Amino acid sequence: MDERLPWHLSMWQQCQQRLASGRLPHALLLAGPAGLGKRAFAHRLANALLCEAPVAEGDACGQCRACRLLRAGSHPDHRMVQPAEDGKVIKIDQIREISAFLDHTAQYGGYKVVLLEPADRLNVHAANSLLKTLEEPPGASLLLLVTAHPARLPATLRSRCQLLRFEPPPPTVALPWLQARITEPLDIEALLAVAGGAPLAALQQASGERWRRRRELVECYDQVQTGRLDPIRAAETWTEGELAENLRWLIGWHTDLIRLKMSPNEPSRLSNPDLRAILRRWADRQAPRRLFERWDAAVQLHTLCTTTQTNVALLLEAFLSDAAEVVNPASC
Image 1: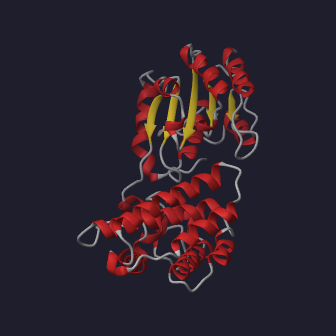
Image 2 (image 1 turned 60 degrees about the vertical axis):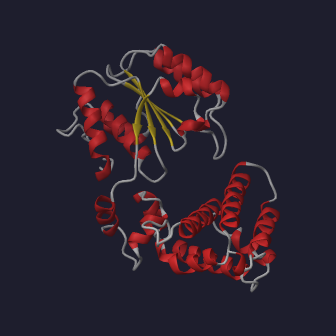
Image 3 (image 1 turned 30 degrees about the horizontal axis):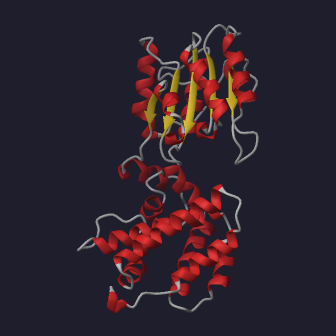
């Protein structure tokens, strides 16, 4: 049975109320930041709709024929649509297959459910094909589109889906959930803040190795800025591990630098509260304009390194070389 994440409770109840009143739409867009369990929610809802004997809360029973088939990945009224490979797109042929699947009567007489993730990976032709299906939705069917980047979907496609917006839960919900699952001696509040308040993202980062890796990169960046480490050698360190995560951390640090610089007092919230002292030192050494330029450069670096075919090492060397050109504190 799918885990019932506590911050999903109100959305789950909404879906159950719509289902009970016959107002469940033909398409739901599950959107929100990564690490909030959108995929888990979609699987939970799909399983519940196809289950032959749902329990009182509306969840799948986990025991009936339909539940057993879903676990085996062979339920005839359920489909998953994903890119054939990581980083690739969802193609029009995949959507045509789904359209043909939805045109047929459900083999078990209930719902037909399609889970499409990540929906923002639809190419133009696939999106147009899906739009035709949404304009004339077949009866007793549900399309679940999951994405962390809804703005990448065509507006016409978004307008034909009912939005389920996932937001980070309050710390009073997230922290107890994390504390029950993290056994290592970590600052869980800082971990959650670094993950943007997303509990699943925080849990993923909670391995001691990843947390140590983040600290290693902080020290590496500090050494570059103070002239103690050559940018070329530093670039080698930054390419190790998961590059996209490394660069997301970098953007987060620069966002906090701007907060520290622009606030006359200590800002009430930092994305990296455990790094406050070193970030304050970095912010004090640079002018406000310089900090905004560096933030923009970090965002561009992330975009180029994660979405294009480029020489990552050269881009990192250039970014780090620029970081080494420290502004005179007197000019700040």
